Image (cartoon, rainbow, N blue to C red; front, side):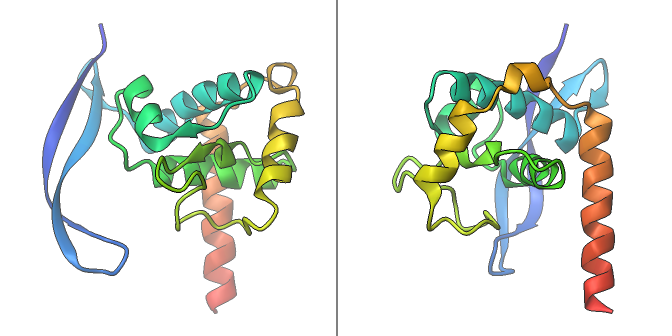
Length: 153
């Protein structure tokens, strides 16, 4: 039976490269740590359900629904790059800040047409498309990292 624990992460860096101490979520199943790619797949399912219901979901609610900490930018990034690579509507745009109603600063997409982009997510046939595999997120991330490395050379 899966169970979840919260671990104290001794040192992390915020987006301004200042060291901070935070409580970090870590899911454990049968002794193995759940990867960010597996957590992205969990978020995918919740976001597909939200799309079918034509609703946006706050980071807080996503955290409550999945048992993850509210810091899920990396996992949403996996979904973003997967959707970009497969030319799908950007499913990650349904995850928003409770205070602002828009995705956080880490979202790499231009948000000037956010309502139209979210409308495309709402009408897309996500169930017909099916869910990606964990390996799909891993491969997409490798491709993105290679592209970033090539761009800096």
